[in-house]
Image 1 (cartoon, rainbow over the protein chains, first blue to last red):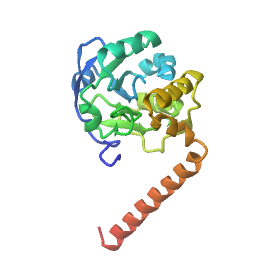
Image 2 (cartoon, rainbow over the protein chains, first blue to last red):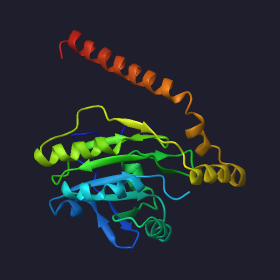
Image 3 (tube, rainbow over the protein chains, first blue to last red):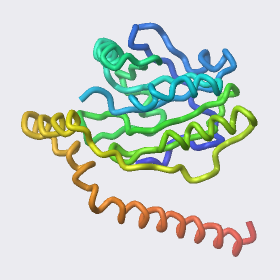
Length: 46
Length: 179
């Protein structure tokens, strides 16, 4: 596990998902406002 | 998540927006966001496409969940910081904030330093949930993270050393072959 995890210096793979409020989120679009984006992967609710 | 919530004002100050992603459906994520009063959005990767894309699937728990990790992506779309974590052994948020501060001053900066990590001592609530998962669902995986606590401080440095030696061996081979 872990060999294909994008590394520092790589372009972040773009993705589209729904937010908790069921709005569409796209990484590429979120980056357009000129801020960094921090994506926190977490286990979720147990 | 609670720690990120506490530091969110600083995160915003350094021109960064946070999004937390899990495989939970929107309804469950809304409940978590409202219970924890999170100031940032939760993303719902119900089909597990993103965790597969980032190769962060932990297939051993709850039918496949995200492995804990943090990525900071600059406005150009490049990953400038990443930390691949464990449930009981995670990046120290101070390290993330120090990086963001340095990145704010130098937007071309990428993190090349090893990431500082710390051990997470499970709260009573977490312990209770682990016991519930073990007894009601027969799930031993959650317990493993914390049960490994006494041996992990030995195993993790050994794994790092092994990786380092492997990388050194590779670069020696390349030097020998004239690459």
